[in-house]
Length: 307
Image (cartoon, rainbow, N blue to C red; front, side):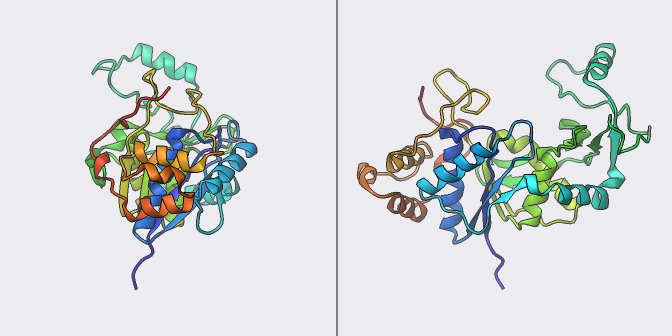
């Protein structure tokens, strides 16, 4: 029996979709559909301080208006805290520990223990709480995970072979905050495993977490996605990455064909001026048939000039 091919789009509803996030949605949709696979939609709203229901609804509306129809039910991470808690305790408790260090304490420690390799070295948690056996339920506790201290590689379908040692690049990451919020690095990995995701296409800004997430999946005895593709990012004329933090303008779906045409052009796909007069379904059908990520190979920035 041939295993199902499953991709996903997993936006965080901290704002409306912008052109940068739309290119990711279009790329992941066209790619997995070109393989005959399913495209799942997961709303990554674990950050209950920044995520809003109205933004989640807006994302669903925009995707539907553009003909980017997902398969199955939408998954909301905010409904899955009990799952993350269970996996953390049942599969990861032996390499996790409670940490009570405040930011002020860590800043003081760094001032008295300067990084020997200079300012460009990653800031790694110094494991001040590793052997203190703090109570996980204490109100000051955040939970840290010890990532494997080993060089690991994965093959990225766009960026090539990527090597990383997560213990050296990320250190003991916080996977659950004091406010009981689960962090992206854990929640995303668990959901990819439980949903059986085989193909991940997302922005290159997430790539530094990929080896860590692969390790987390292995530690949790969950299936690891077979294929990764980290897309180049879209930048504005000001040199800044298009992002919600940089107040990127929301997309306007009143002209869906023009918007899809723009996204596909930015992605280096086969487009013709006639597509501007086609329906979203026709445009996406053409894009799926002709999908080719070769123009994106080894690129970190999409070749565009937008304001």
